[in-house]
Image (tube, rainbow, N blue to C red):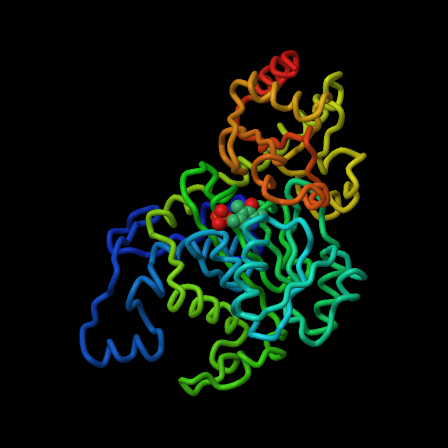
Length: 418
Ligand SMILES: *Cc1c(COP(=O)(O)O)cnc(C)c1O
């Protein structure tokens, strides 16, 4: 659908396939296999991917979701997978081989760090950590590096990378810039592909689905000449074709589909695809409303006598406030704050809090609160926790859709109990 349409329109008007009953909405196709009318038809579908064969490769419900995701991120196409971690895994697997290296930002999502350090290392892929700034990355680049990986908004530090600087460097050196844009709310807050990233990955578990009810992930990419620089796209496959010649810029996504789904089996169920597809229809409304509430709570908390500090990209004292203004449509739905009195005070607050639920998720319709020091970052050495922007007195809030006055009242009562 037309590139000229706005996000909220694309969110409800794209990814609606024709179907035999003219059902208005997305039908769920819970099937494993598809039937052929003749030997020739079966042969053709297998050889040329001219139709559906088996749901490990493609499913119409999942395909509709992929179409909608691509429209919302302004991408050439999308591949949906079973979880955000599956998406990161497949996105990187399609770009590296033994002996290559990946440059990654410090303080990435814990599941991503585990994947890099414990899985890619098994395959002989080296991981180098460098701050997501052009100079820092340039200092560790050499011809072995095939990927620069960063996140659009770090969690829980809420810092932003120098996206355009990294994109220019990646272009100059012929290296893929891959951005985990989960915190960019599926292109609503930020579209890294428009700033020069080559690939975007998502956990659809968060803002995209929006109800905290399913897991999912996606890999998206844009039109680019970059894939000429990768042997896996310009050399013939064992089946005897050159991926770049056959698929053009889509060769990267075809490789993600092949490695992640056809061979890796990290498949998204059509039921989950349906729920995420529904969730996307309200994402713009949810993200806007929750961002406004988060901004209001951040300003209110900053004035509270029992609060030591507040971190929110929309506050002028945030270290990346200027970058947030440049890149984000709204300042996002996550904020962190420190309670005066350290971890003991944070513990009292969590014992007293009502309404805000303690859980390790973000982008849920309900407002969630978490103590990262003892949960998501609890297994890291203390210095690593501090380097990731985590502190003992710190609480993270993922703002949901409740009335802001109720959230303020609940936080106010809990702070009184500290
Ligand atoms: C949650 C999350 C992931 C992993 O997604 P799952 O769906 O839980 O596998 C990856 N990156 C970020 C930034 C996340 O928040």
